[in-house]
Structure formats: structure tokens, C-alpha cells
Image (tube, rainbow, N blue to C red; front, side, top):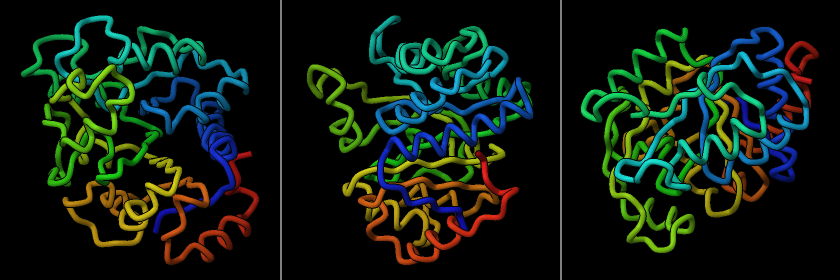
Length: 257
């Protein structure tokens, strides 16, 4: 069962997630992070920046990238990662990778997998969850053993992401994403979920059957998962009272801060 932490606000979630990252970096200065984009992890990056840690040796691998955007497009995930993560956290730019940032697209998945392995694997992977149940850009129907590859985005995902563009017509139809199998190789998964729109999907991911129809349910197969959610997103969790009790009764050595 995942460790589920139910908090009052995104800011509180960010403090908890940043504490987990800080503990990792204190023990391993060249830790490898899996980096998610979008609005969900922003509170984590803000809280981590406030800790003023030396993150110059940290390496990072983005979860995904759009296919087809011109170089330098402000909504490419390379640009987003640089703007929202690399610069405010003072990461070393050359230590941060984004899928398909080198070489031909048809070989980019295999190259990215090899780069993650060569780095020693991802120590802590930050994840969000889409209303379709996707993590990364692994849409419903994705193989639970999938690796980094090119995928077609669902209409729902394109509509959800249209707020970052002038219109839905500008949202790419394809992406390259770490696979569910890739994500499962990370040593620690930290999934963030906020808002009532995520409540049903989160409950299915955490407590429902493991199924390719809801890709985020694959986290149930991982031995070290922390789910951090606000009250609205936790509203459909059947075992919410247990999760609260378990969090409040942590032993001292289990606490990140």
C-alpha cells in the first residue's frame, strides 16, 4: 500500500515533497531526480528553492516532451523545466535531460533509457496524475511494462493542456514519454494530486484494480510510493482515516524533517 499523506493545501504538500528531496540530497548530493512539469509540482519546486540547498550536482530526467514544437517554444517541456526548475533551483543545466533532446526521434526512447541507466537510475520521481489516469504521457491502454517511446495524446489531454497555448489547435498531437516500466524503476515515487477533479481518478489509482485502463494504478506495484494529496483530491479515498492515522503516528526515523 502506498503511503498517502492528506494535507490542507498545495503549499503544505510542497513542503513535504521538498523535505523528501532534501533528505535524499543530503545523503546523496548527486542524486537523480525525475522531473514532472505542469502546475501540480510548482509548490514543490517553490518550497525546495526556499531551502537554499546546494543542488549543483543533482541530475534530472524530465518525464516527457511534446513532439513537433519548434526549438525554443515557451511551452516545450525543455523550456518549462529550465524556467520552473533549473533556474530557480540553481541546477546545473547540462545535468538535466529531456526526452528527445539529442539524436533522431526514432531512436530517442532507447537513448533516453540508456542515459537513465548510465546515471544509476532515478532516485526520486515526482509525478502528477491526469484526469484520464495518465502519469507522464502514458495514456489509458499503455502497457504496464512500457519504456520511453513516442505516444499519441488523447483529445482529453490536449484539451487539458490547451490552457498553456493560444488554442487547442496549437497543442501537439504526439509526445515522447517515459514509460510505466521506466517509472517503476525509480527508487521512490512521489505522486501529487490536488483538486476535486482528481478525486475519482486518484481513488482508483491508489485503491482500485491495477489496470492499463488507468495507467496511474501501476504505482500499486511499486514498493516505495508517497502520495501527497489535498482534502479535495482525497475525497473519494476509502481508507482516508487510516492514511491520516498512519501519517500522524510515524516513527521518528520515518520523518523527512
